[in-house]
Amino acid sequence: MYPYLIDYYIGEFHILIPTYPLLAIAGIILAGCIYFSQVPDIKTKPVAHIIFFGVVLLAGLVGGRISQFIIDIFIKRPLGFSFGEILKTAGSTVTGGIVFATTAALIYARFDPHRIVTWNVLDVLALSFPFGHMLGRLGCFAGGCGYGKLTDPGFFTLTYPDNWIVNAFTDSPIPRGPRIASPLIAAAGLGIIGIVLFILLKRSKTRGHISALYFLLYGPFRFIQEFTRGDLIRGILKGLSTGQWFGIIAFCFGLGLMIRYIIRRRRGVAGPPYVPLNGKAPTDKDAFE
Image (tube, rainbow, N blue to C red; front, top):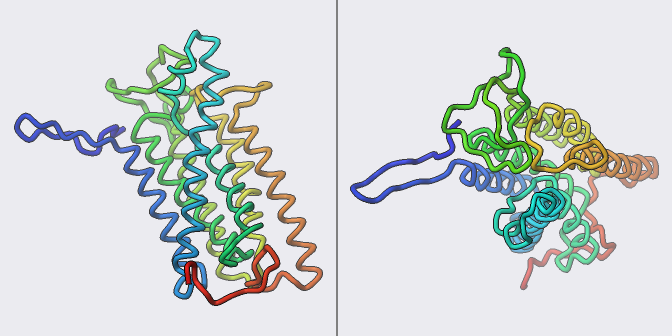
C-alpha cells in the first residue's frame, strides 16, 4: 500500500502527494486518450468531441459525489452525523459516476448540437470506461480503500501495513489480518473487460453492441466482485450492497441495449452508423464554426 506517492522533505517544506487522486486523474487521462484516439472524425470535429467528452466527464465527477452523499446520508445519519459533516466528509463512488455519465451521454445524444454522437461514438465512449476505472481501482489499492474481507493467507490476498488508514464509519475498528485483494481483482477484471471490448470493436463492422457488452460484462462482474469486499461504507440495501444493485441495473440496461442492437442488425441498419442518434443530418462543421 502506498497512500502517498511522494512523501519528501525539502528543508522545512513537506511535499506530500497522495497516490489515489493521481491515479484517478491518470484514469481520466487514459479514458480521454482512448476516446480521442478511436473516434473517426476527431480531426474534423475536435472541439465538438472535446465538449461532448467534457460534459460526460463533468456529469460523472459530479454524479459520483452526489451519489456518495446520498449513500452516506443513509449510513451516517443513524450514527449521529449531521448533514454538514456528511457533506464535508463525503467521497465519491464510481458506480454513481457511471450512472450520471451514461445519462449525460444519452441526453446529449438526444439534442447533440454538433451532430457527432453516433452508435460508433457511444461504443468508443463505453470502451474508455473500464480502462479509466481500472486505474482508479489501483488507486484504491494504493490508498487502502475498497478493501477486501478477512480471509486465510493464500493466493491473491494481502495484509495491510500498520500505517493503514481508511475512512470507514460502519465497521470501525477495523481488524488487521490477511484480506482478499479486492481492489486488484477489480482492476484485473476491468482490464480484461476493456481488452475484450477493444478487440471486438476492431473486428466488428457494426456498432451499438460494444456499449451493450460493457454493461452486460461489468454488471455481473461487479455483482460477484462485491462479495470479496470488506468495507461497508458503500451501503447495504435489502441484503445487497449498492454496488450489487448497480450491477443488476447495469446488466438489465445492457440487455436492453443488446436487444435494440439485434433488432437494428436484423433490419440491416447496424452497419457502421455515422448518422447522429438525434436523427439530424450529419454535418462536416466543427463546434463554433
